[in-house]
Image 1: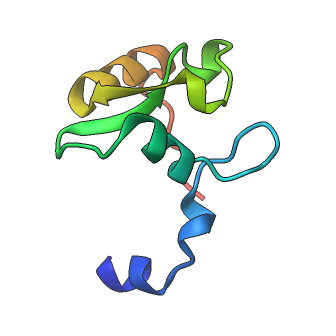
Image 2: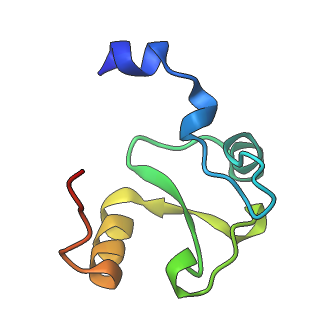
Length: 81
């Protein structure tokens, strides 16, 4: 896994805003670094009408956020390719 991410272009994994501009660096500057048990997320969530803008990002406890996403999306979210 380390080799995969080391050889990959980091920008291809960066979430993009409405104008297709990568967001990670701006969110990092806006909210600061993550702790080991945190994740950046949108509130309100994008699937329920939230906007993909830096001002809509928040710090979440990773386990709580993942549980909320699972509740919103359900168990059938994974599609094998």
